[in-house]
Length: 568
Image 1 (cartoon, rainbow, N blue to C red):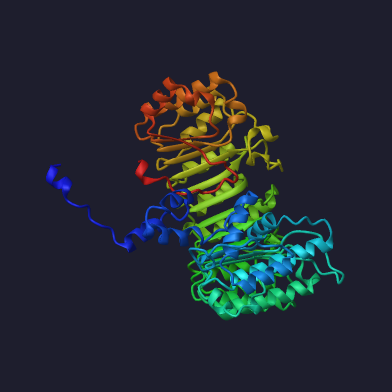
Image 2 (image 1 turned 90 degrees about the vertical axis):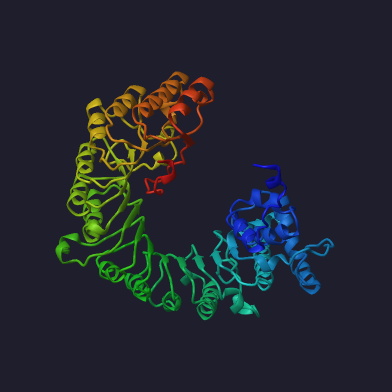
């Protein structure tokens, strides 16, 4: 580049362009803080981003909590501060005039995290009903004042604190913001995009809270028509409760609702009515504790845009002997994710099999947090041959069935296999590591060769949580003939990576595999073993594998995104 070109001034970015760039960093608070003092423009653009979601996460220390609360208090009027000081019985220091009106930037309010932030700042002990009621009343009052200053929330997440304190009339002591008292409530809720309501105790036993929730729902119904995500987690609702028609009305009022979550322990008529209230453009449906599937399937058939169905702890009690699977209507989901269903093989084969048959060739992604059975394997082969992503537990007995199934699923690109000790195991300790109590029996050489040879030719990503020895890993890698791009190992450090010699052998094996497979470009590893810091072995591995990263902790065998195409 010539000296003349170097002297030319660099083109100036417009403020809109800079704002767009900074917005992409909204989740990177460290970088945003580093931009804060660049100049006035950066400061003016960064502050709203930093103060849009201060209660997104739990505040860990009192210093941080105090800084947030004092910043908000400084923006209140003198009358509001005096009223809060009197009600809270807490002295406020004199506040300097704030540089910004911080409450107006608030876009996300999480009542649980807000409550904990205030408690850390306030530091009021509560060990009886009176002290707890004082704390709860103070937090509710503070939230009312703060939210009355906001210019519009995008996320409202309300969760009842879990305690066993009741007042003299038998009502649970808990706080919910009183939206009926807000002069600007309609403006605050007008642009709401995500609404979550969680209440752990049966509402029927708490009249005061039920009245507050009714007021809240009426206000949200009145003010919000553009919510995209709704999650209602309230156990044991009865059809006769006045909150039920309000929930249905809330769902029906939204013009473009895309995601819905609710508790399936309600009366089945409530669940069905709620689903019927949904417009056809719903894309994501999660049902917790589903009790029946028979009545729900015809409703799912009407949701032609539904892409993802998530079932958490299904407890179905249908009489499957009376269900003719051939007469059931199809459903159009592309992703089916099932968690904590339990090891009952009759439920697995009938319930999950029914869903797989109904989804048929539409299904692309299937994740099951339980051992896949031979019958389910047959259903996958017969009805779900377009599957591209499969995540499942598997035991030694049923491994051969899975291997046979993989040979008939030619489109599989993403596979996660979690080894368990037996089909009857009810443990869930595998979610953390091998050292937590599960005894995974090593697979035989024949089984490993069978598994390696069964991988479909399209497979790009392989994730494994298996109790390998170095010899067994070598056998597996030597028998993989397809060009896998990315391999991740989850939670296997408990037994395999304790000895440094094993660590060195492991890296050598992976480097040798990468040498035989030029397309292999990403290796995901669990906790950092000592061998990774050995300069010679690290260089050897990096020469063969472009990207070596730490695997995320595998909590559930779930589809976790496509492999980054940039890596391949």
